[in-house]
Figure 1 (tube, rainbow, N blue to C red):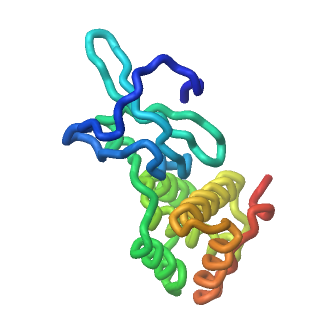
Figure 2: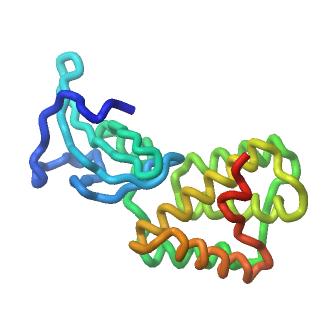
Figure 3: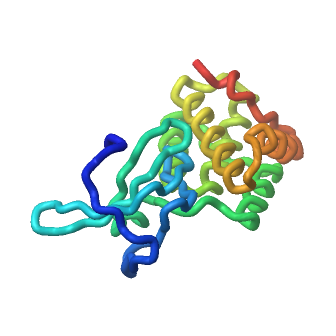
Length: 194
């Protein structure tokens, strides 16, 4: 996280980004794992010791954070493009299927869900959301699991809204319909806040 004004040299849009990165451009909508959707505002270079490193400056939508990600590390930190229609359908299909696998032991379940959230994969986030909703309907969630459910809900809704270029309320309706097919109820955001 860095302040919005940092010394840098802007990079031209058409500059070759090299083969080790994902080749994002200014204005691209991206997902930064566990933080959500953002937009690449700038591509800059900074001197770090004798080396010059290139960075993406992301503006994270929900928190207004500015995050600098080294271009060469974009893949390893999980930076990726917002999902497309085919992937959206896979998420909806997963949410509407009746099968549900959740570990019985709280510690193991929390670790497994945390690992899945860190992958940055929207399918994994959707799986965590579904498992926690199913658990929430059978018994109260712990404080940490409730926070994780709130986070998974936010990540899923915000990315799908950006991908479909629509209001979050429309995505919430879509998710409610998908989950109702397997008798699960999509929680309102206000239900999850402590």
